[in-house]
Length: 120
Image (cartoon, rainbow, N blue to C red; front, side, top):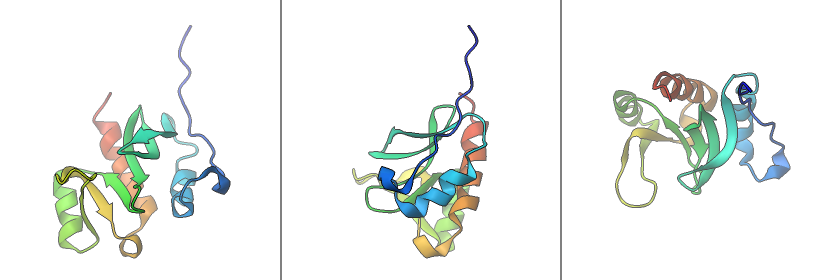
């Protein structure tokens, strides 16, 4: 029996999702192979083909997975910092975005393209 591709799960504000993240989730509703849910770094987020690419951390930071050089650009511009999941070692391909400094949806789309391009 062929597998049916997953689609994103609709999320209501009462579901415990940070309300700032809801527009990001909504931007991927029709995107094939994108799901919302599951855990990554202790938080739920968006995944493509089972790989996490964007989430709101337990500290309330919007976090995306992008290439290291893009993380470096975002840090240099003051829009982000390297993400530290709490063990004191910063993740080279993860950026914690400063809330008001950047557009979450555009960064999530960039992260989606990056992670999707990595294959499964």
